[in-house]
Image (cartoon, rainbow, N blue to C red; front, side, top):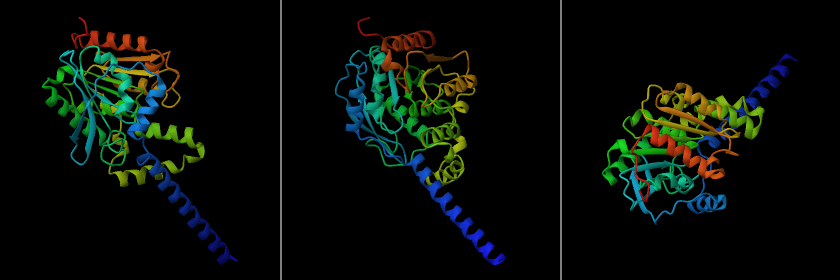
Length: 313
């Protein structure tokens, strides 16, 4: 009888191990290898949003050497020649076209623009997604490419990111201490917090026990440290002007993430705006473009005076 009980317990144990291992492998793949949009998909989605589009010219297609990856990008040469430039980082599973809704406030100032596909997205090299751990170095490579392309000094070249790109932009801060500014819209505070929240929101509370296993597998496969993916830690001690924007109604990444980042930031150089007009994640600029542009313009005029020259001035 004892032998039968032992065999049953052993069999149950192995079944649970198989289930846990399978669940961990599945959710690890969701974390680091989720399907992404094609450029055509991204363009179509942006067209459906009916956002306030900048009158951008046909871009120059460029490739940027990120070391272990090649980054595909679009460079927009502004004839307004405001002696400024902006690097633009898109959100998760999107492409460089998905960040162009943020172009107009900077295009009007005469800034050149560079938008690129993050690693594992669009036409950039296939790679696992590490939420800023490796991507911040890609961003630095793209930023340095932009400096070289335009011949501008870092103090007149800013960074704009949305969601995944916002979190990456903030993690670039320690690497680019001379950058003009960072505008981070709808960032997450750190990898573990957003994953725990999203796991429960997207799949249910039952996924909680699988998250540690998913972290373990994901870190091994993608060669990164989950604990080091932390925008809230990256901004500590930074003097770069930072504008944090988050919709109050955002339920995908709650505004508390930007609030937490703000508590770690330098209050003399950082602003936090929780917008009442954003109806969903990263939609503030779409739902009320004029209010959003005024917010950005006021930040630039206050924290980066003289940045760019508005067309017609």
